[in-house]
Length: 433
Ligand code: PMP
Image (cartoon, rainbow, N blue to C red):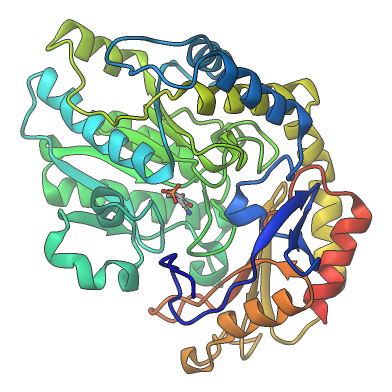
């Protein structure tokens, strides 16, 4: 009997014993194509020799040194590399162990910034419905997914949620894409005014919505308008690229596509590419300087922040991404990826939408394509798809539709960037079956 506490208490999971490129192999020797990269984690696949060797070298040299006393070479080099490629004036990197920690850190940094600059009345966070920002209490409060929050709501801080930018479900037939983007962005201004402009500290969003909606990018112009509204009211812009960052959408940072730079940027998943648990929060100069020149102490921290082995792994990952121009390769192959999806699924009467960017795609399933009516939630379509695909040797990431009925069950595809066209075609064949 297993003594591991699994997430799904009634499932009998196969034992994964080996990773081989884009495949996972279980104890029976069955091979599974990693079609969602473990929720957009494994961007380099599973047996990258450069990353493995960087980890071994670092373990031999130095496994751990508490950051209350020391910095380390891999952490410094990784921070330099990220900053050299980061948008806007992001110029400090705070390392953590994963996505939720990056988001928690961002929320606390935003709050402390406003305390340091003498505006302690700024305490409200605004985020979006149908978003996912993590499972720790602050990150869960920021997320806009009601069923995840429900039972924990007595423990959560108050966060307001505005509409996501979800053109497929929300744009009116007589509305241009531009007008739609402006309308949903303007909800931010309305919410700031409702709460009182001098009480709002930050707005948080995923540039491409991942887990909750399945690879939904914002329409052109939306984030530019969001940035303008934030600037108008002194509200910090926090972008959560935990899932969509690190080359996944064809840019090292997803917000590059929107030509917008945040004040705080959260990354994780693809940063460690599954080789080590690591995340990071990139902070703009003004925020860092305010703390350095104020109390001089960020009132936050975790034991493993800046862990040398995790940093060495991530440094090798980022070098591998940049040396091989992988984000640009992903961008180049994006149209082919989309073409394959449309050819396989575009005519299916139960496919309502195919959307995404780079190597980050969602297929939305509906009972009726014309009215976009989702399947009845009691059918549990997402769960059935997951099981059937798994039996076919495909690991993908299905999610149920949202409760407001605006979004149907969907499958997220986020394969490793090193997947060949044949491997991608094979995965799509499995899903089609
Ligand atoms: N933010 C986003 C956008 C995510 O997709 C996730 C994880 N799916 C998180 C935060 C939380 O990351 P973690 O699971 O590493 O805590």
